[in-house]
Image (cartoon, rainbow, N blue to C red; front, top):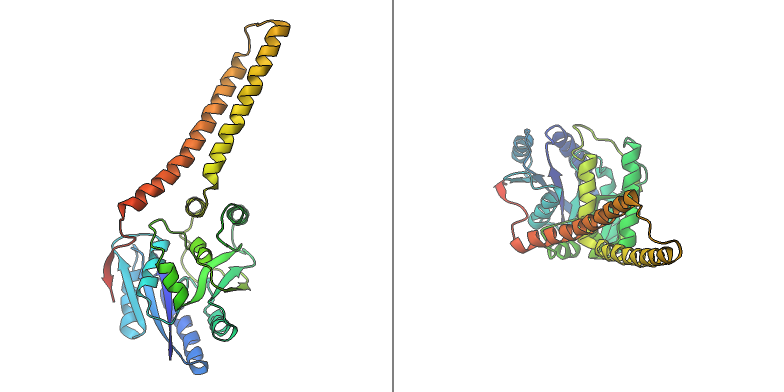
Length: 311
């Protein structure tokens, strides 16, 4: 018998968890009849403010396959994923959201692809963003295009965290114990043979999304800084270009003075130039500051998460 561990990061998902457990159990029971597998579920309560932990306790009492971890506070989804992977005992490990936007029905096909087709991982991607605001979808597509151009991490447009992995791949991911985590990039960086399954976007069964536009923007910045040094090179390019502009401006002033003299004028343009150069300098300093801040957090060696309760 092969064990499949289902990891479910949960933050304020009291309404979704019972629905998820019911659907996941239905799929698991069907797979047990077809394949030599058994299941365990690990619900990771990421410091929820509602009754998510109480629901986890109820599910664990009713189903021996259910285990849960509860953080001392909200550490974020990345920490919840890492905690789940650390506690997973399965030969195969699958990451899923509690809101059923990751259809459990795909799990049978994912398992077959690994066991019969020789893949190390089967990941999912959305082919549509139905239900999302257009502006959010636009920036999401631009992010995927940008990060694939400036980094070596293979991140597919529309990629979800929903994926089934072999134990070997999970161990490789756990070996990357960095504090600032961006799982989509880590999955691509460790390599291994991955098959992608495309599906239409599914809306949440209950509750509201925890990802605002601002949170997604900050998360995208985490990914860029974690897997690319291009922004640092960009700062150098800006500096070099401004030096060229300064040289051209000096030559222009010398020629103008020799030909037309040196009238006192141009205060508005001078103020604009100083403001522009100052803005570029602050922008480049901000880029350096982001990388320095991440380095500072890494050197502290703080734990990625702290458990308050586990079952």
